[in-house]
Image (cartoon, rainbow, N blue to C red; front, side, top):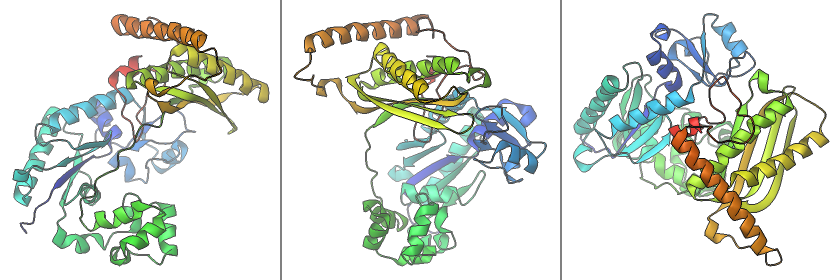
Length: 419
């Protein structure tokens, strides 16, 4: 084994949601498991265990197709609150072994290794201790693949080379031998469309990708990200750009009992209040509110409303009422399958200037009353429990909470599940 240093460690939890379910329920261990957003054959799998993957079941597979591939598939409803709890426990254990540089998603994080852990023997020893700590203190059935490499990107690529429970090292001197056998889509950031653009530019293999020039990849990508990609696969440590939050929202696929418009509106109102609460925690206001719905027969409706920048519950509920009435006037009666609310055009409150020609004093007084009401509701709910104080009917869902779920780029706080 060579003695070239590695600078980054990347951890990718294997089939995370499904493995958590197997850890929680011994009857599921060693069996094919599919995690579903709702218990319906008309939805898609959001996570599959390795036992299910052996039958061809994977993320995005329609449930009815998955059951044909694997008739003895164990389907379980997603429990996002449990997965966030495991995520937090994994991070708590991991920081005992290495500092965390970035949490990429609920099941991925990276660490820039300290100088004393950058030799391969030291890095591998630390990675094995981390794996052992996760097995002891989180769960022996919640496994991970670990990559060690000159930068975080290549360390992530390394995690995909050996699953489950892998440990792969990439150093500068073996990059070509390790990367050239891969397919273009094995690299994060290259999907179907980007591969098509690379092919159009004369790049069909990883070897051709490696031997191109940074500026050529910049032209193919249409942005500086292509140039950064070239440097990353060649082992350079290129810093990630910082992105400001551009929107806050919640969506929900409705339980069958909530698909009538009147019941769906109760869910939409709950989603709106939860999103407004997140805005207040972030210290932001929004200048636009958008409502989107999808029906059981595939029809879609969406409308965006410009509003006075705010983050209070009452202001957004008034906006929701306007858009909901507009939606019902424009469309025939229907059964709704999904509702979404999004607040965007975000800014800090101190950056907002009232319209010169508006009745600024009156509006500011009304806004203060609504802000105080929202703050009071937050205090009561935090002190006496969720739903102590709320608007209208508080709907019960199969999951036990409304709106809060894990997204690729966002890991909800535990408090969100019980707001």
